[in-house]
Length: 139
Image (cartoon, rainbow, N blue to C red; front, side, top):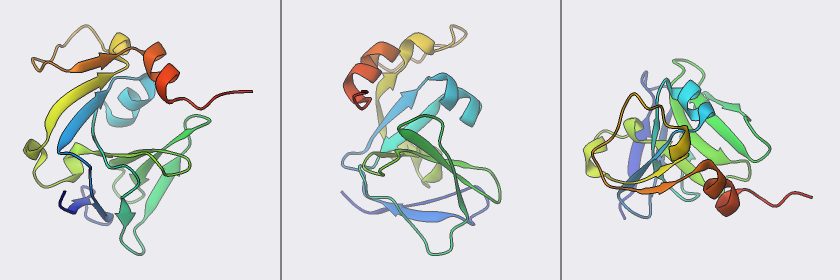
């Protein structure tokens, strides 16, 4: 896969990423909805996101295992990642051509508001299925 460049709305934060596939997913969880003002349409980038030196990136740890990265200047929602940085998903709208990605998955589908529906056929996972698959063990 090619290296892609991403940036925030004002351009103060710029980064590179190498997604393993040109695929996008949507998260409908409550935190993503509040963070983005809607659904979080994202591109899984494994652990390949590298921010340019001096980029004013802020971080909000919204759970015991995840954090959200944003531009400290304009507030753009940039990346959701695990706190160890091994799973990074960038906002599709940080890339110049969002249409290059194919929408393949929706997670927290049981949390999606009923006021809209997407026409794409996707793999769908409920909140319980997401936590069972990805959340680190407790205890």
